Structures are given as C-alpha cells and as structure tokens.
Length: 283
Image 1: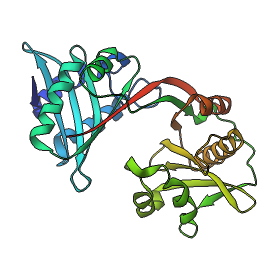
Image 2: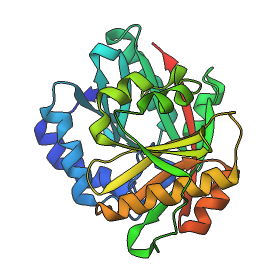
Image 3: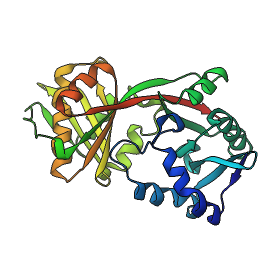
C-alpha cells in the first residue's frame, strides 16, 4: 500500500531508501549510482517531499514492511507530473500500479513521465503488461569534467542568445511538440540555458542546448535542420557546449542520446551508465 510519509517516518527510513539507489533494478530516474549525485544531495532533494507544496513522498509498504518510496512532483499550471525518486526493493510494478491509481484520484488530465533504467526488469515488465508502451529509449552518458580535455572549437558554431533565438526556435519547433521544454518555455528562461548552433554559410544545420544550473548539468538534445544525424555537426556542437560548461565551472554533464551520437560522445570523454526507457501517459 501507499501512504503519505510523515516526518518521523522520513527520518526513520531515508537511509534504508537511499541504500536501494545503489542497485539500478530497484530504481527509476534520476539515479544516484552514476558517480555524480551524492547521498547528501539525495537527502537535500527528498526533504522537499516534506516541505514543498508541489511535492510529496508516498511510502510503499507490503504486509507491514516498508519496501520503498515514491517521491513525485507536480506542476499545476502545466498539468504535469514527474518523479524525483522512485526506489522499491520488491514489488516495483505493484507500487507503480498503486501510484497511477493514486494520481487518477487527484490529477485528472495531467500528463506524467517516467524513465526506467534497463536493469529494472520488474518495472519494465509492468509497463509492457499494462498498456504503457515504451515511448523512447536513450543511452545515458555521463562526463566528469575532471577528466575532460578542452577541445578545439569549430568556427562554424555560434552562441544563441535573445537576438538570434528565432534561429533555434525554427529548428527546435520541429522536435518540441510533446516536450515540456518547448521553444516558448526555453525562451522565457533563456538566462538559464546555453544554446549553440552550427552554420554552413548562413544556413543553420543544427543546435545543442542545456540548462546551466549548478555544477552538474544535462544536455537536453541536439536538433538538426533536416532532422537527420550529422556527425560533423554533432561533434562541433558537443565540443562548444562542453568547453563552455567547463569554463563556467561545471563538474559533470549528463547526456541522453542514441547509438550514433554516443560514438561521438564517447570519443570526447562521456561514459555510458545505462539505457533509459521513457514512458508517458495522461491521467
């Protein structure tokens, strides 16, 4: 069963729950066994499940034994639900079933999104068997900047800012139909974003974009003008993005990508952690 956690229960079980994060078969994303996120960060973020008006932690119990928790958040104005941590030692699928039922009673019409590592066979089996097909699958790469060697940048890459944002929006608009971070939302929060575009003569062939908040960053994507992978464009954009992140003091960079792009990322110092399976739905 699921029940809203109390402060006393949080303090009693938080270390037990954190220990589950060392095994990807018990986890959803975000994961904490990536060499980037720390135990202290886990407690800092999970504490918001007690203090925030838009987050909640549900303790998962079976026959009186605590087997995990689900920490989720919601964005009311966007009618969106996401997972901050879902860690379940046994019964991941049943916990997911109860969560969807819990959400149905409270968040009708909301869109939800969940990423599961490939190792979480129990969670993946539940999704497959209960009408939740996999929307996409990505390779999860991580780069630690302490191991990064600054790359030589291409003269074909330019920074996107307020003055030339429409160049990026024209390309991103071909991809962002179902994304939370569409062009409109990115433009409103542009100070938090770093965006670079690759040009051949005056034509933009692609763009890369990531949020710059804190020291542990994530590339959200590379968009191509013709919607087709281009290794020259990908490598030039990645180098510019990584060089800028290193210059601004980043410690790590996450990148969800595909097999083609992974070969470039690996050459630049990224390490493959797992594969992420994405599931989405509407309550």
